[in-house]
Image (cartoon, rainbow, N blue to C red; front, top):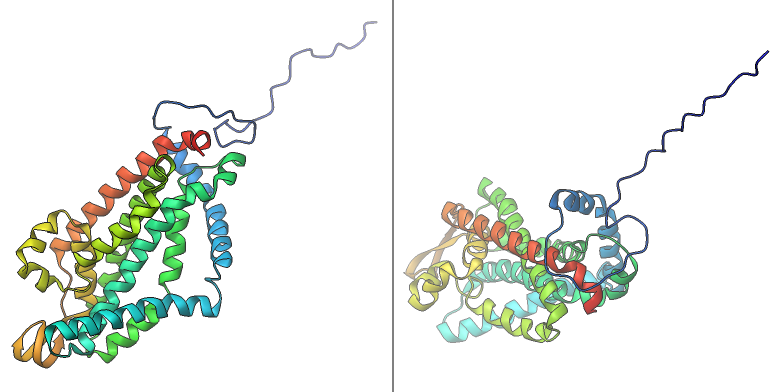
Length: 318
């Protein structure tokens, strides 16, 4: 009588998750030549870590007291006071009051420009500021500049209430064309994310970049359709030539025209009317919309890919 024999076939190995550079483990960071990882799994991991980015953004907002009532009020008061300063300055130069229409145009441009410049400046510093997180946690580093853009969007949202109030006070008609503000703002966000990513990578290698950016953005403000309208810029041949070089000409130009409309003068020449008759709606400029989309996609692709190609070198440089 023979004893029953047991099968000696090896058991199949347990299913394991595919190893990636973001899997738990020990990673040794060394200087390496610039190069891109496989983008499909990278962006899949980036999307999978979106909750981590949102939590980090909320932590930064609480640290800056942005989520408090007075913190949100300051986000409104600061550009509102600056708009009043520019309004008084333009009134003195022109010699005639510009009225609520121009103030509505000025506010709409300033609030969005502050969103762009704030996200870029904050994004340029975020890699250096979060050096400890980079050294101790494996995650797609592109989350960091995108977090700064998300924070800037959250800071921009409270200002919409002021913009809506002055939109009605200025007498600009409320029409269905205002819906175009959504895709226009989406272009601005995508464009800003690309610039924030680019300058975040550059800041790792050139730490003085953060000192230069505020001056750069201030000059950028003066050549964009914020203080001046699109019509005024096109009349100034020097500024008009910069349209192809200034992405905010199409992005902010479309935003301010759709939001604030255009004055119709009873006497004088628009936009500086001696006597304002009424404010008319200006529909979206498809030329500006196409140019803004090209700028947004191009700048985001260049900025994000440059950032991704250098991010594995950050731990060594910090």
